[in-house]
Length: 378
Ligand SMILES: Cc1ncc(COP(=O)(O)O)c(C=O)c1O
Image (tube, rainbow, N blue to C red; front, side, top):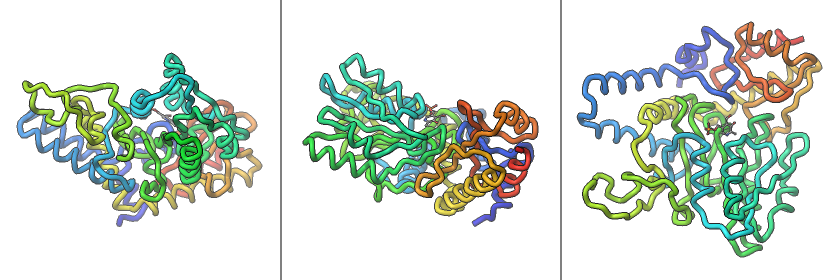
């Protein structure tokens, strides 16, 4: 296993910026560059010849991804982004007129509009009202009724970094499914957690998950993963279909509309091979350092930043309770616009969300970088 100084050599960005913006879009690392160069050179020189080399690499990445989150390969599909992934579930299951979907009122639009888009079928989106950025499970329980079809939440909320208690929500959905004698699907927008925090789907049962790779997963934009629990694969009909959705996809002239049984039925056509290769490069990096160690470092860095900011009497917006913390730390200074510009001018890459500032360091960042950043705020 490489130490952090060695790992930092794989991130050219550290020479230019204190990069605390992984909750927005991440920089790439050298392992991605190596495989992307290989892909580029191959296609420059050989095009489609022996294309199976790349198809095999994609399948290897699918297996590694499955192992990484405690899933089976047959439950994973590569997708173009989180919004598209969540739309697969939203548009793929059956509803009755009057059904509802529950989401917290602080969700990123990717986990809002796919549900509101069902309004035309008589499916209502019910918003769980949060107080001080907390998704309260008693509130959630009181909203679930005999018409609820889906509960969909972000693993980590984008604005304040509140980490939802996935195990507890999973239990609640099961309990309510039993009580009402109907399946209530538990769906997760995982983009703000995957790559920074540990997820084991064998321990925490969820029905459906989607995430693009361009944030904590440190990969290219436009390639991500969808997980569909094998117990519900049959319930989710693919809205988009094409040559790859069927059992014998290379039988171009023999038309049989016989859908694949695995989540690959959601991969309707040609894929973003470059994007998937960069996901694979990140998986290798994460496996090398260990996701437990990564989570520990990420949470350690945000805790360190919170302590430093609090020692300067700066208001922290994020919930600091251990089980709800994540890689995102949001805070308010006396003059947000001025501090934001000052930090950017001093090469600290961060985001402004609403009337607060947001930092999101990854495992290759350091305590010294946190100190430099905090030293720029009065
Ligand atoms: C919680 C959450 N979901 C989704 C996205 C992005 O969605 P997509 O992958 O469709 O671009 C973001 C980006 O900020 C986000 O914070």
